[in-house]
Amino acid sequence: MSDQKMNLTLKIWRQSGPTAKGALKTYELKGVSEHQSFLEMIDQLNDELVRKGEEQVAFESDCREGICGACGCMVNGQAHGPDKGITLCQLHMRTFSDGDTIVIEPFRAKAFPVIRDLVVDRRALDRIMMAGGYVTVRTGQAPDAHAVPIPQEKAEKAMDAAACIGCGACVASCKNASAMLFLSAKASQYAHLPQGQPERKDRAMRMIMTHDLLGFGNCTNESECQSACPKEISVKNISLLNRDYARATVTLENVSG
Image 1: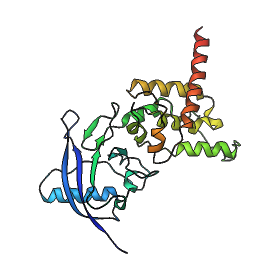
Image 2: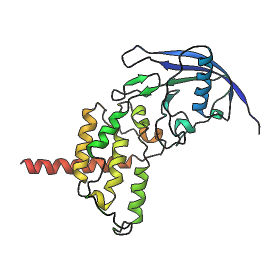
Image 3: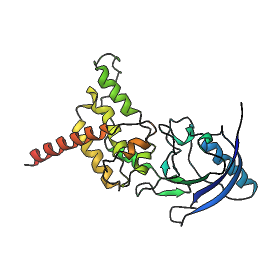
C-alpha cells in the first residue's frame, strides 16, 4: 500500500492558561503520512517539540474512536475539520494535500473558557445534564426489557438522539454559541419514551434555564450545528424541545395565575 508523505504548515493556537494572552504560532511539519489520523499528526509535532526542548501542544483525547467526544477543536474554521459525520480523531491526513496550511484553534464560546492551547472547559454541558438530563426512578429490581412496549419508530428516534457524545461542536459552529442541539438531544432521548413523560415539561424548563444562565446564546435556526455534529443529530430535536418548553411555560403561567 502506498504511503504519500506531505509537508504542512500548521498555525496552532497557543495559550498557557485561562487568563494568559493567546496567539497563533506557526510550525513546519515534514513527512506526515496520509494514513495518519489528525491527532497522530499532532502527536508527531509534539514529539519534535520535545526533542527541541519546547512546550508540547496541549489537546484533549481519550478513546480516539469517535465515542468520547473529547478531541474536538476547530480546523480551518470548521469543528472537527472538513469531513462530515466524524470526530477529529477520525479525520485522516489524506483529506489534506502536500503544502497545505492548516489553522488549528480551540472551540470558541463564552461557556467554554480555554484551559490551555486547544483544551477548553466543557463542564457547562455537564451542568445542563445535571439540571434535567435524566429520568427519576425508584431504585430496586430492574424491570424486564419488554415490560414497557415502545413503538419501533419512537425507539429509533430516542436512540438517534442518544447518539450525542457531548463534544461541543454544535456550540463551536453556532455564531451565537448556542448548545441547543446538545440540550435538545439529551432531552429528546427521554421525550420519545414512556419513562420520560412524567418529567418531560419540567425537564425542558430546567435544562433551558440552566443553558441560558451558563452563558450559551440563542439558537440561530441556521442548522450549522447539525452540519458540524459528528453524530449528525437532527435539528428536529430542537423543535421538539421548543414545544415542550412552550407547554411548560403555559402550565407555569396557569399555576401562577
